[in-house]
Image (tube, rainbow over the protein chains, first blue to last red):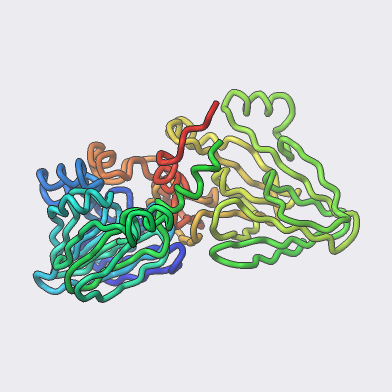
Length: 221
Length: 227
């Protein structure tokens, strides 16, 4: 399976070449275009129960599509996301996990397991959802964001504004805090902040849909 | 007519330089700047098939396209054109069998290019989606815009595109609106819904992003319009 992410960073789009026998699993609605001979199969993402929880509480789609090349020549599949912005590929080792915020997941290779994890009340309070999507290696996983994606290795504590966290390693826990006291937090416009604790890599998006909505809302008259 | 596309691909803008008495037709509102000498007028549409019947057809179908016409009395008059959304612009030469363009992707064309509204091939099947199609024929330059990048597919065998990602395609291609996979249930549950299956030989232009999908992500979170 070969891939190329073109039109980075503003309109990043995933151009995959499936070799004979290759498969790729993608979020419902991610397909832009593909060669006619690619076979598609729609399934619950990670089993019915897990899919149901994800849909109900995690804001993820109930279904995923599996694209398979059953021919004996290479075939192309083009995948993208609803928001404009960048796409990142991560190669997971066996057993290595990565957690996603709702909507970030785009696609993964077939051996990657899609599951749900309890994100905790703090996560819900930070408006990040009660459950999180958890992927487990081995294999490739692709995720996207609104804006650019910055990886950051954190140790102990790190603070992230709501709506800017895209993905994080499972060892990291979320907590809610105020950005510099009650008054400061109200006046600085930062409100509640997401206090992350633990060691691992987090991925940040350089813009947030929340920010866009806040900018546009007063103009809707 | 000379066309230069600048600021590609994220925020493309087209600079069109007109010869004496040459005319450029463009989507209303697309003009960013122009030379002082250029004369402008507005029309509901130019080319054949207009008139009362054409107007009626559009009223019934809920389709209309206001077009601006730019005419340069002297050589070297310039018009700058850009779409509203972020994205790319494609310069295409219509000739021969013609090009079908998604209406929101149409930016401008030479006045020798005929624009026919409401390409019938897709119509009934797309009733749920608020898109319609322009049928461009004749000969001349056409400018097409996209939300995101535009990628070209040289269809030789068969290619499938999600309906929201089609920008334009050559009329030498046959197409069929169909389900994405082998089962109807899967097609709708899988979020792909209807796709367009192109067959034959010809060029197909797709946009990497879908403005409707982006709109649906942001739109529901905006306050309702006060009426």
